[in-house]
Amino acid sequence: MPRDMVKDAFAILIAACHPRLKLLGVSTVHGNASLAHTTANAGSILTAIGAPHIPYYAGAAEPLYRSPVHAPDIHGVTGLDGTDLLPKAFIPPVKDGDAIVAMHEALMAEPAGQSWLAATGALTNISLLFTAFPELAEHIKGLSIMGGAIGDGFTNAQLGHVQGEGQRFGNHTPWAEFNIYCDPEAAQSIFSNPILAPKTTLVTLDLSHQVLANTATQSSILHGPPNGSPKDDLAIRQLFHDLLVFFANTYRDVFGISEGPPLHDPLAVAVVLADIGAEELAFDDRGSGRWGVTVVTDGLHSELDEIRGIRIPRGLDIAAFWETVEQCLQRAESSLMKRPVRSSYRSDDSS
Image 1 (cartoon, rainbow, N blue to C red):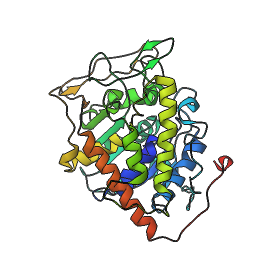
Image 2: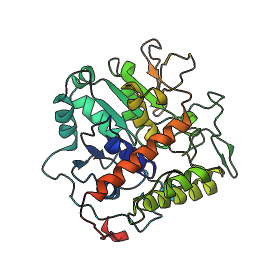
Image 3: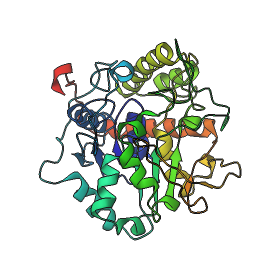
């Protein structure tokens, strides 16, 4: 599961804690923050949710051909600013192996047509993976990507308004979504792969901006459902609530969306759940079929075969999605209750 971070924390939560999923590992990548920060964040989140045993690797530190781009105005310098409850990673990242090779070995060890890749950050690791091991495209069941923006009424989601720029459908430039913008050549190599494209689902801002963590949702994350009994002595709910509030404030200030921040990345994991039978999370394509997707890279582009193109959902059952998040938080709490209490938190310079 290649990723970057606040939304990625929720993506890791679902991938690691949902009973229908087995998270094989995590690879980190440049993006919202530097690779050093995103790798430290992955270890901290895995520890925070009671899953420190899941291996994680540092992946690509920069795009294929460009300089890395970060987003401190949205996620803070570390990529997970806004809380002092991030624990120090119980287990460090794997040092004696390459992230790309590790992904290949883990996926090939699973039966053909069974495993999914979920990409929630820049697509550099994914591009390197399928370039080095093209046979893997036939082996996996699917690839779920959070990235891209369509606009022009593709859905009714509010995409944002930046002072001085007006309405826009990108979240980094007026046109570009951040994950694709970070490494457009990597994205294009994936979208133009004739074997991979028919297996790919793209979660765009047009979908994720429908899943807003409003104040009621933020309260539920912190306190649990009305009839629940969250473990008051555990910091996990406060941690996830802190991250949401920080993200809500920056998204409001930068994009003018005050109802709540969109939770982009866990939707890429929800796509996998829907595929394996979680019918309550069924995504709504609204009869749009498959799409040819081309990324503009320095003016170069091409047309793809629409029939064997990429799936881009337009809707889902949002209430069912938040119920899934709650279920995974409860499982994380249960896992933490079985482990020795740890009160060591990392400082800002530990990343």
